[in-house]
Length: 344
Image (cartoon, rainbow, N blue to C red; front, side, top):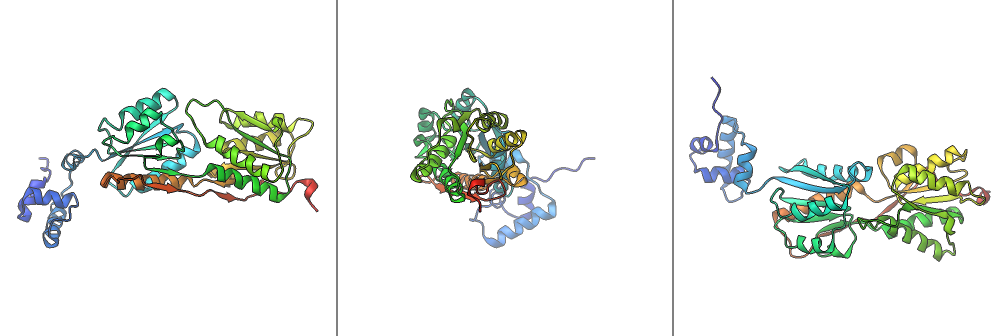
C-alpha cells in the first residue's frame, strides 16, 4: 500500500499550530516567533515533508519562474551571460525559461506578451533593444523587467546592466598605437540592422575616434562590414590582406570575427602576430584557448548582475531604475606585437 504523502496540514497538526503559521514558516516569513519556527521546521524534517511545486507557487502567489529573452542563443556571448544568470538563480527557488529570438517579429511578440501574461515573475532581456512603444509599456507592466547590454535611450527609465562599448573600442586602439601600429583596419557587423544593435557601431566609433586623436585615419578599403560570423569576417580580412597595401593590425567588433581574421591570415601564409596583429572583443572562452588579445566586456558578470537586480525588483519594486555599469578591460595575450618595421 502506497504511503500517504505528508501535507502542510499534517505538519501544522503535529506542531500544534495553525496551517497559516506553518505556511508562513514554509514561505520564509519573519513574523513567526523563533521557537515556534524551529519547532515547525523540526516537525517538517521528522515527517519528511516536501511541498509540491504547484502548492508552493499557489501559496506564494508566484510562478517561481524567470524568463530570459535573448538574441541568437547559439552565440558564445549569449551563452556566457546565461551562465552568469544561472549562477544566481541556482541558489534561489526560481526556474529559468529561455526564449530565443532570431527575428524582429519574435522579439516584439515576446516583449509585448511575456511581461503581462503572468507566465513569469520577472523578465531579463539580453542585447535586444525594444521598439520605443514597447519600452514605454514595459515600465508599467506588473512584471519587473531588467535589460542587459541594451544602450538605446528608450530603456533609460528601466533597470539595466550596461557596459561601455565606445570606451572598449578606444582601449583596443590605444593598445595597437602603443605597440607602434599605424596601418590599422577594422571589421564589424553590417551597418543595416533591423534589431537596432549598437555594440559594433559603438566599438568602431570609440576605436576610430582614438586613432583620429593620434593622427591616424583608416582608409576606406580597410573598413569591413558584414554579417556577424567567423566566415564572413574571414572573407573581409582576406580581401584586405591580399591587396597591394595591407594593414599590420586588425581590430574586430567581436572575438568570433577575430577568429575569422586569424583563419584568413593563416590561409594566406601570414603569421600572427609577426605579420599581423589581431584584437577581438568580448573575451569568450575560445579567446583564451587561442591566445587572442581582446577587450573583455564581462559577459558572465553582466548576467550575474542582471539576475541579482531582477530578484531584488521581484522582492520590492524600486522607484528609480537600478543601473549597473561594467567597465571594459584590455586582455593582452599572444596575437598582438609591434609591427615588423617598428622592431629593433
